[in-house]
Length: 259
Image 1 (cartoon, one colour):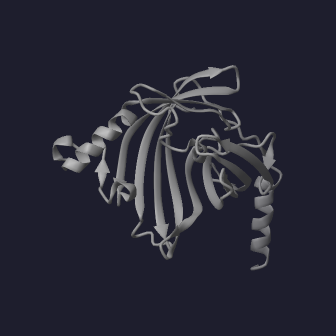
Image 2: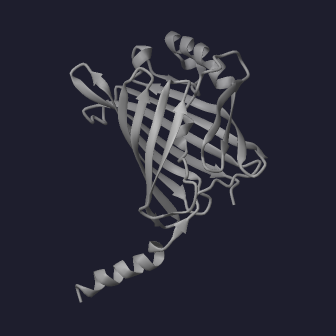
């Protein structure tokens, strides 16, 4: 009996998923909304309890329009920006949604610097395959047109050209001219279970100066809509003093208005 049960389980899994081909495509409609919580931190020697830097940006996005049957125009606004163990900010913590009356003088100065970014509207264009056709364009207060509040390519799997089965691989190459990098990715579907698709990505980030870093990530998608539910991205970064450091991005998405 002990031998039969695993065999039956394996047959059931093959029957459910082994011959299943999935077409991964975005299916946005005008007016669809999603909230993205983008958490970035840097840790040394996997010390998760004491990150060197710790930043959270929450953005709300809306699908403004659909061009033809393959392009989506999204607009986004920053809901809040929070920084702990402030790294480049000399260790100062900051929360854009805090009451300014309760801020320290340094925090008020930071608030004045960040306010144009928070008050701006950001637009981007992506296609049904998850490819970013046009990166963030800034509208509103005068800030650098190259400013990217988040790296949206970490929020979206680049889908394969056709249907894909569990365990099959596909690849994608994306250029990021603003940061001067090329992202070379290999994906495969690890599982489809409980209405969710789990996809693993491994790859290399090549910088313009010849430097490169390996990275890995996992994405959880909604099986019906193919929209992102969560993701975790890890990149081996440079050493920090005598410690090796790793940059980590954790993403959580709430989708509103999707059928």
